[in-house]
Length: 314
Ligand code: AHR
Image 1 (cartoon, helix red, strand yellow):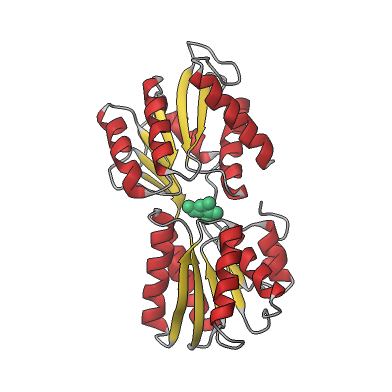
Image 2 (cartoon, rainbow, N blue to C red):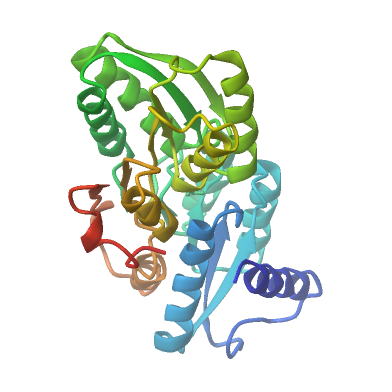
């Protein structure tokens, strides 16, 4: 699935570079909507793109959706957006890699009268609409869960997402604030960025297990399930899983299976904003006036309710 999407995205990008119109039934009379994805490195992001693309193809015959992949590189994503603006898009949908780096080009779009819809991660300037789940609430809920799970005392390892992404900042800040308020004897003894990707999370966890002896780590809090599952892999490889709880975010089926099997203790569902991204982007491109923010729901999933979620994630 990953591979197929990368291929189709590459086709879109290279066709654009050649000045060729793309899209299901590309044509000059279509409403062109640009969708700048920050990265395709996780199945969560592949679902975001594919869900929006398929919805547009099936339901919006008058839309030409042009999709780009920033490859987890803010400079590449800025160039993608500049290229989309130069092509005369009527609305920009964007899930920005980081907030600061993408803010000027989003402001440029807004100043030029092109409405902007941010998905999941935010920028530091006014946009027409933001759609996503509440990362501050997730960070706070994860903090409260961890305080209770540890009985108010213990050592935590944190595996962070991409530095400077609003999701990372909120998931970290509210988690730390909640531990400080609700269980000051729970300490974060190691914390590192792993870009929401499994392999760097495995490497960080392997290194951390070298630094801390058996019994010195009670819990791992990862900013997504891919990294939480990476931590599980490293713990199992070192035969150190006993007594270490693992918490993730997103709601991957593999994470639900891991909770059921006792390898993780909890995750928090995080909506991948499809098909809402293109649904609302389309309404805005047609001139509809909407509220400035749509907050999607999140759920805590743990051993008490995991059966209801098994197989229903992604
Ligand atoms: O921005 C949020 C995160 O980005 C999702 O939780 C993650 O899986 C994705 O790559």
